[in-house]
Image 1 (cartoon, rainbow, N blue to C red):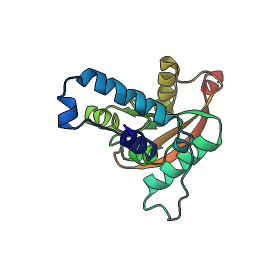
Image 2 (image 1 turned 90 degrees about the horizontal axis):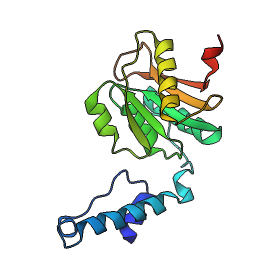
Image 3 (image 1 turned 30 degrees about the vertical axis):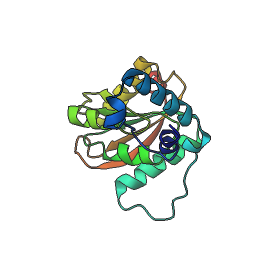
Image 4 (image 1 turned 135 degrees about the horizontal axis):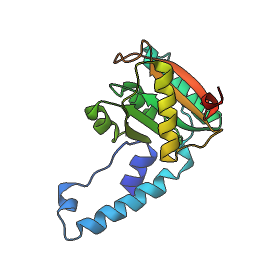
Length: 183
């Protein structure tokens, strides 16, 4: 199980049992033991430590992902909400290691299924709205409904503009939850 712990500490998104182990006499107990090792390994401080980035971002989505994770790790951010069609920016964020949960909000079922394998990412079925500002408010409301945040918490939202076009995350917004209700 040391190899499982090391894989988690090194940033692996998912672990699996080999055929021999999964088909042995105690598959349920083996999965339970692996889960306990994963949970304990995830508690290691190395998961939330930023790794130095020495190369410039290759594309806009990567720049937004880096800025989002940096902000999440250095402000009192409670959650990241990424309005996504493809999940690309969410994947980039999950590879950068943050202890802040990332919610991949998508109307695309294939994207929601795929992101379940990304470290620290939670898929959310999300319809959105035609108006980007309303879509951001709906994302905030979804996090409130799930108990991920409370009024007054800071969250980071990522979105592509023009809104609704896949592969174009180009905006990061820091929002105080509940602030839009005051107007």
